[in-house]
Amino acid sequence: QLHLQESGPGLVKPSETLSLTCTVSGGSISSTSHYWGWIRQPPGKGLEWIGSIYYSGNTYYNLSLKSRVTISVDTSKNQFSLKLSSVTAADTAVYFCAKEALSGWVYYWGQGALVTVSS
Amino acid sequence: DFVMTQSPDSLAVSLGERATINCKSSQSVLYSSDNKNYLAWYQHKPGQPPKVLMSWASTRESGVPDRFSGSGSGTDFTLTISSLQPEDVAVYYCQQYYTPPRTFGQGTKVEI
Image (cartoon, rainbow over all chains, first blue to last red; front, side, top):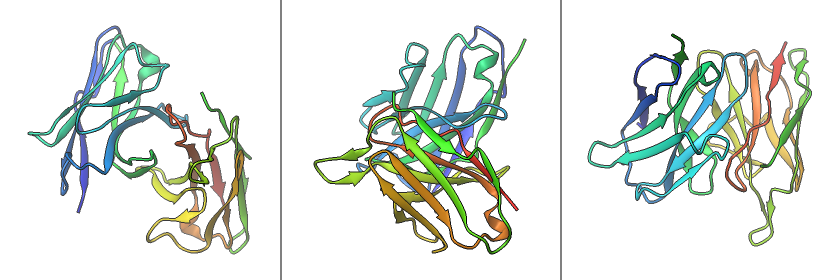
């Protein structure tokens, strides 16, 4: 049974870097048939795709966040990570990690982690 | 970026009645080389992660009840719940995966 679990600080100060890790269990992150992605949902708002990574390290990013976003993968730990720099209150959101089909739709989501940006 | 616009923003439907959600893309998501529409539908209930209902605009995912159906092509798509059940109360999103960024619609809240 596949399970994705987000972990990381729930509170980040403005201008600092948000860091989250997604641990994959019940499946291999080195699958050649999937991407691994991050999606967020600000309070009371809709879903925003942040970016995706292939096990080899190939990435796609949302251009609106590209200058601040880094997604990386650690196949030895079966994890992938998100770093978002220079955060503001607008980055407060529930952050979901996800497993994506190669074509791009999301067929499995983690439970989500609330990250609040506040001093 | 592709802009996905859903309508309505919310709707109230009686139990057993039909619910129809529309999704319009600013550009076609129909890929000519494989004749597939790169569009998915998701259901999102409070406190839970979203769940995929449809991929390729009309392919129902395993375990999704057949009262859910998807239709449309190119830029205009519809998700239909043929007979609304209490467990269908949720926010529904469409998403294009034709090209990154894989944009979502703003969501449609379905209530009873």
